[in-house]
Image (cartoon, rainbow, N blue to C red; front, top):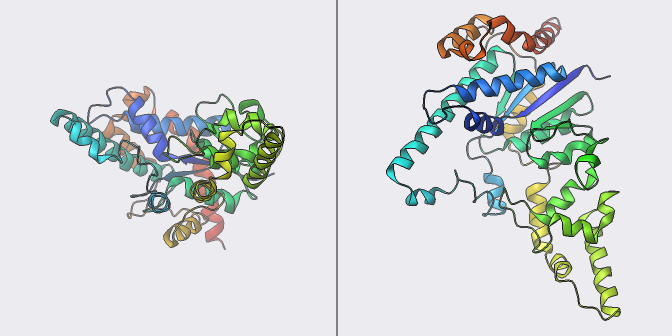
Length: 349
């Protein structure tokens, strides 16, 4: 039995969801994102008995490594398409700027709260949280029971490592045993399907005409066992040859697949989380996650309830909670105590 049960949080996603889902999110001074973010983490710790939590953040200019591979990567995102501001009124630009400023302030505040709650965190310039999460899983899946909180299906690639995914839009944790009851294909084919079909949300092109349902129609073995992109291409050639010998019209989507090798190679580089895109600083920061947390927060202040309570009073946080400081913090105790235990063992040698 693994003694460490770890929660990896796709933090940039959770912050955006928390901020835009909070009441009065157009008000620059609101703390709805802060409150919703921490309360979600609190709920997850309580429900799943985690004793280690790491907040994984997208770094500044995160995604630039993928953008170099494919300039279209995420160019459809609102925050990337600066040229759209030309079509906005001055008032719309002002409101958007205030929202962005508020999100940044709440992100910094969340990070400050996290230090006092012994929640680990990592953020590296030019590196996406996806790569940090994947790298952490690849390094630690054999010794930790790892869960990922996200809404990004790309992380399902990591299920074959024994990792469990807490998709926000699924009612149960997703693992090897129940994956097929939630998705129409075998868990080992997540990457294969992504490479062929692309990803609309990240603006990654797939093979023209080959959506998930069409792919499963022509290659039903994807539902039952692991299939590589190469195996599917070979099978596609066989299908086309059989149709030719039977004097049937060729299937355009399969011809597109066979002729789309260059796109498939690009997509493999973009989407394969088993080969995360990192830099030297990211490798160093990931190594530091194996070290115990120091008693101070990195700014000369000792971690603990005093600083946390002070911040909560400044933010009127407990007014939103509607109860006591102790009742809010109590679910975080297993994480706090485990981190203190690790530090004690480390100092004792």
